[in-house]
Image 1 (cartoon, rainbow, N blue to C red):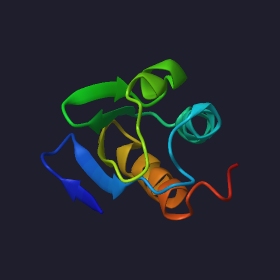
Image 2 (cartoon, one colour; image 1 turned 45 degrees about the vertical axis):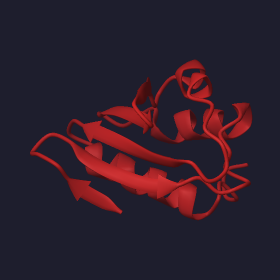
Image 3 (cartoon, helix red, strand yellow; image 1 turned 90 degrees about the vertical axis):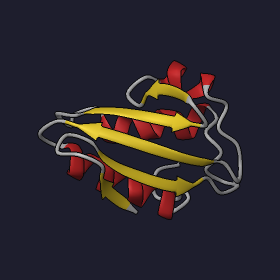
Image 4 (cartoon, helix red, strand yellow; image 1 turned 135 degrees about the vertical axis):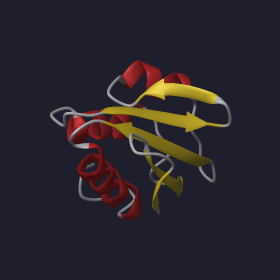
Length: 97
């Protein structure tokens, strides 16, 4: 679900399912899918934050099955990037793995 917390930060909230546990391959697909968007994207797990365009930052979050994460976006392509990420998580990364 994408919500606008303020004018610059739409937020996507999702649950990570088993196949989309963010190990190296799904993290790489996530970064690849959003790399060209003109937006800053931040993954949030609990209170930890990571640059969504950095595989290493994503891996440091150690996102596991069942975790709730939020993705904040800011920039010209923020909403479009969140739509792509929403599709990734909804498909459990099937289209991208």
